[in-house]
Amino acid sequence: MTTSLLRPDPTEHGAFYAGYVAGMPDGDILELLEDQHEKLRRRIEGLTDEGALHRYAPGKWSVKEVLGHLADAERIFTYRLLRVARGDATPLAGFDENAYVPAGSFGERNLASLLDELAAVRAATLTLLRGLPPDVGERRGEASGAPVTVRALAWILAGHERHHLRILDERYL
Picture 1: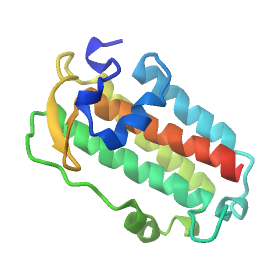
Picture 2: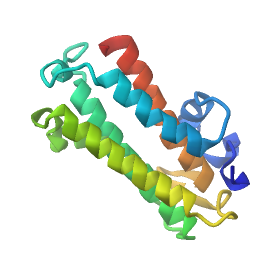
Picture 3: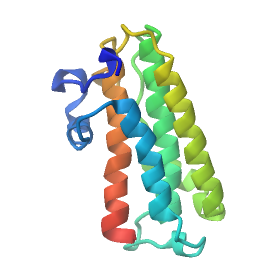
Picture 4: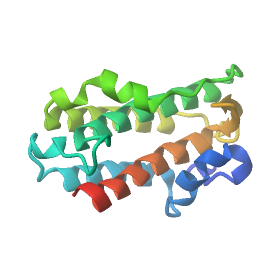
């Protein structure tokens, strides 16, 4: 494992991301990210397109919307990671996932296409992380009004998916 992507300490990200980072097991973040997509695919593969429209309560996202949200969020976290890794000090804005999900029309797509998109996004994320110079993990930027490092963003995006996998297990599947 490249030492620049070791688990970040709490000063490397906003407090609102602490649960995502803390929720990840110890290990090589690249291996954890690789394993995550396979676990998600295995959990979802028995669902039908109709079953993936299930919402555990009124006003909550469907399984398809959760999957679309995961792809959107990973793209945004990875974009932030790229900007910070390249030394861009421009503060990066947050995003409103509750506005993005309806705009994505994920319920109109088939489940296989959403899983394929997630696989492509994850492959791009891993390619970017593997290609980073070894000294950029502690490079700092700002996102959503808080300081953040490159390595924290890698752990945040993994922890974000883990958080949603847990919700899928507990409330949907």
